Image (cartoon, rainbow, N blue to C red; front, top):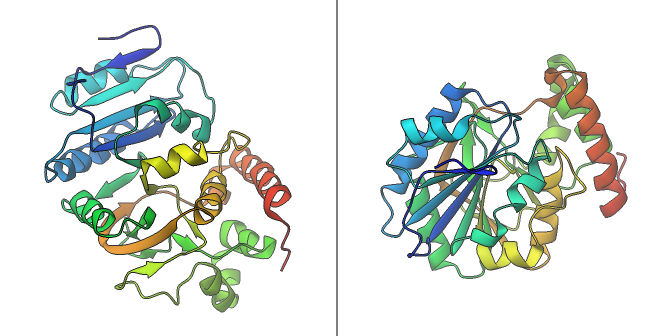
Length: 278
């Protein structure tokens, strides 16, 4: 069913979902998105309760609804479209009125292990003080990604996002400190200050209390902002039993538009939380 604003693959609306998932897309790579949805469907099949998935497509026009209906009819997927490119945070906030008991903010370039959701929800059930969970991540090259970070100095952002590989190697110790490389990859760690927005599993009452993402960010730093605000009211946990492969990152390699958005959002972030140059 495709409406003027929303395309929907029909699902049972009587049972509230134990888990809801939001995925924001903009001119998505269809193959990449299908890989994400396939891994999500497999992980969801290991859960006992219902799962509701919403794709918020910021493309204009959007043709995701019929594609999803044809290719993933077995998944409980809804598509929100027609709002235009409102930005990553604002798009995710469109689902705040349809959250399950837990809510996963997921990027369209993430593939998860088959047991990832089961492991994540088991941890959340066992630790009611945890309001936000972040996983272990690798890139498609098999290299570990560091989703947890300390509060960034401006120098850290410049080095990590825009410096050539040789310069980054010279400042490896500094960058390792920033991205918490000293944290064991195999043990649960509590209260990292900042976690990546590619996979953020919330206890939904926490996300509601935070009112979702700050809409002042169009792209970049909205996850930094949300992490810091979440850390003021709940505990954040890195849980390595939850494993994903993430294909994103490196704003500096994506062209001038992304660099400009990065700089604009960095300015918003530092004005709100305080400057740190070095």
